[in-house]
Length: 381
Image 1 (tube, rainbow, N blue to C red):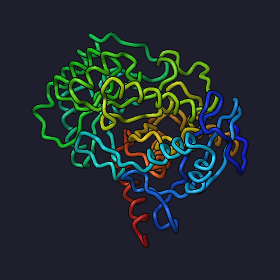
Image 2: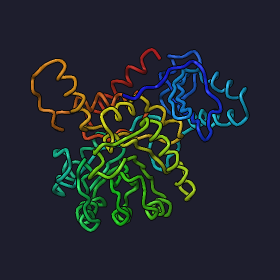
Image 3: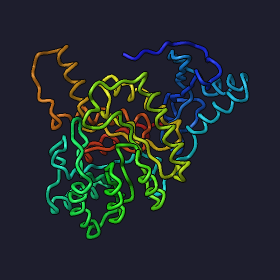
């Protein structure tokens, strides 16, 4: 289990060769606070921060009012003041995106799998007729993004050739022009030539599990002004669940995104073209995933929108088995088909963390859960 030493002070400098500081806002509604700041153009607010500090390899956590955090930093040095101010500015800066998407609410990304090797069989589409029916159904539920994938990336899945992937998706993407839809269309792929083919067919978002490790893919995003969903994955699908290791997942993955965003912007990509996805289940143990969920608001201090995909994933099975073994010996079917309740619970954790996008197989159920939470939030606000 990852442990943070709880303290009631800050260590300075906030950032150096041996020290690094992160902030995780403690989120709530505006009515929860006497005085607070808003996360960008979000529906969540904060007054206090969990401050995570790595000091010479030791992990500490303290809690400060954001004003006190800024004041103490200012008193220490101008460098610390700039560093702390930048973190807060990233939290409150209005998020921009170069598509017709509303970042003041939680948006739904619906999943369409075209590879029959997908871990969740009910999401697999095998015919153009079914493809059209699913897209029309998603439109009825006002899904903001439809994510189409032609290669399974479940743990242990072997990489398919780009030619095979293109042949799987091209047949279906050719039908997009005949459909009437308002949703943005996302292509879930890690392959450059597949991305190129998708862009020809009108794809507006590239969802890359490899985090745009191929520079040519970054060039495509820049050239065609598309949106990049940068996902974190430790390793590759074939081997990613074989003993993944982190010092502390939230900060390790935060560092990955910080470096990746800097790299993308240096190549000429605008922040309005970037969405980040922590990659739940991609090279992560159950403990890794749970720590990421707990500290998910920390990623807001990177200043870009956040997407999460927790739908039907094996961590739901792992949590359930752990709890069931403690309580009862009843054997339950914990296959992906029987994980909707866990999916909704985790989706609502993500919603409460202020993420702007939730990727799900269960569109109607997830939207309904969010609508109910919103209705409660708007009461007596």
